[in-house]
Image (cartoon, rainbow, N blue to C red; front, top):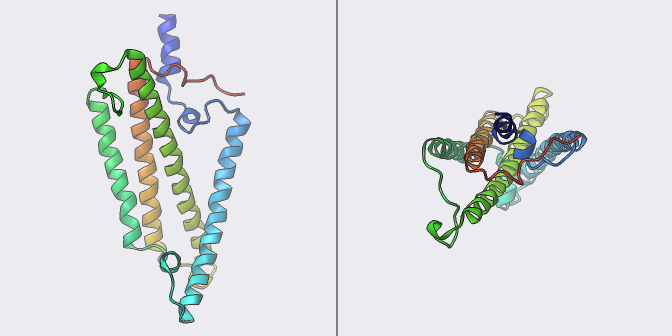
Length: 210
């Protein structure tokens, strides 16, 4: 009973640090990573606002903007809103399917029936690593968009020229990316639960850092 309790403690928990590839990092390193991510998001918000104003100034002067310039000049729009919400819907449906369906073998060239138990667990652990990398990227994108929304919102309240342009669409865009990151988090947690049931978390779960 004690062993099973310890197994639940290591495999049944859902440590946030492990999901974001910081399971082996100390608490200070985790805090530093979080502060760095927030600072980067705010700096990106300032840079995006400056680029927005610069590209609008070029357009007003008659300069033909390239696609990147048009992207910053137009700010958020319906064209930039739907991808995040679509990704959120896809991840939610995938997570529900993962929770309700059987455990699927890892993708690869070899047939699942020809894989040994060790190869199966190894393939699933590699997929878990890729999923966590995708989660880190999605979370960073969400933070960057939130940083842009925060800086543009504050600038708009202070009546900075063109800062409030497309602010409503920007909020919808940021909400979609945040929803996609949360849905992907749900998928990764569901996948981790399957690995735990297979006993494939050995070598992934690490003791908390100090």
